[in-house]
Amino acid sequence: MNHAKTTALILWVVLVFIFVPGGIAIAAETEDQLRLLQQQNEALQRQLNQQQKTIDALVRQVREIQNSNANSSEESAPAQDDFERKSASGFSLGKVQISGEGGVGLFETGSNGRFPNSEFRVDEAKLFVDAPVWGNVYGFAELNLAQQEGDDVTLELGELYLDVEDISELWGRSGQLSLRLGRLDIPFGEEYQWRDDIDNPLISHSLTDFWGVDEGVELYGSAGKFSYVVAAQNGGLSDVRDFNADKSISGRLSFDPKPWLHLSVSGMRTGDLSRHGDKLSALWFAGGFFHSIGSAETKTFHANLAQADIEFRLPRGNIKTFGGYIRYDDNDPSANNGRDIYYYSVEGIYNFTRKLYGGARFSQIFARKGFPIVGNGEMDHYLFNNLTDGLWRCSVGLGYRWNSHLVVKTEYSFEQGKEVGGAKRDHQDMVATEAAFGF
Image (cartoon, rainbow, N blue to C red; front, side, top):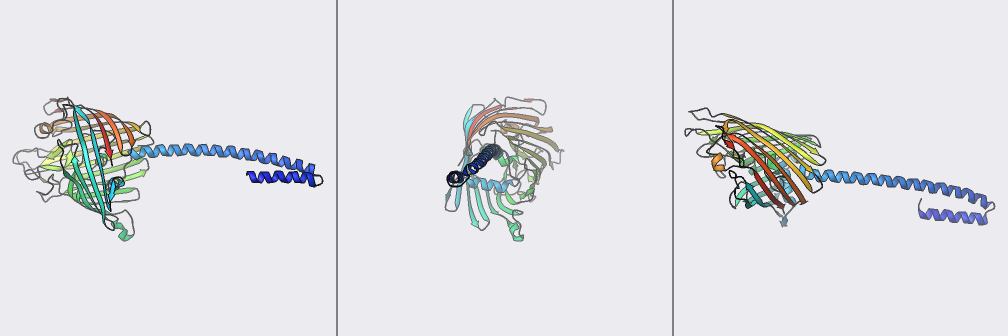
């Protein structure tokens, strides 16, 4: 009951008492009614207070889930979401949107690793430019000034493509089919989606670390709880030539049966690659590339891959795991160089608070009869001159998210294995501290 109504009722009681015969009895009855109304008002007020406490608790829980999932969940159609994320920050020059990312830090490995001298380094520096072209057609370009795999600061082209969104609107369906044409990420597996420093909760990656960019065409879209992406690309490392008519085919099918569960399967064939022309695959693998391990008489080589990914999205973090199989072969007339390679990775991230988190990742590769696996080792030594029988890496780290554009993190990675013949691979552990940022 509001104050105006209460005041009016009291005034009415007084008037009745003064002017109405028998007003004392009426006033007494009215006083009882007032007392009852006051008790009801107090009960309602207690109920409202309790409801407000419940609402506040629910709001806090929702905020915690949103803050944790903002750093843990990935969309099922990553290519489109990646474009939108890069465009979400930065600044505009008319219709042109410019943004960027970077990572700087201190890295050290053992004597047989990449950073034996405790190096300060620019780990990553990227610029993104995107703009509308016409209607649902957009242009996107990525410029790499420094990359994690490189040993120098250079200017290189990353992705560059024309994006034709929502072709499926032609038949009245939104999001079912879109097209990209140009230089594109290779859509195999899922780790490449959060590989950039600002997206990766740790500093290192899994041992397999599949990623790459290649010229070609890509289709992507979603329907209900399913999404897909499939691409046909050149397959070789060269940015301007294709030395074999056989094309690389890759794709991923994703399924989200529940908000907390994400599943996907990926497949890829590099296609036949020329040993003397292409030399290396466009797909990055285990700190290096696929290349011919056959004799000088070998003309072509190829690799076929299959992988399954599972992600559990939890209230205070996530668990991601994947595993797969690789079949390498070539046409060496003097020997059978076929290899069966198996691998897996398990990663967990836990948010202690909204900003402080910890994480760990364990990954391993099995390569019976040996295969080029670089890992944290020197590329010249392990990519071309020595074959590794098996290798594992265990990474643990802490991070602090100042905001969505700045993360400071530190990590220690243990890495060991053995070469064909039994020689140990050791003194390759890495300790690193890094600040990753976006603008």
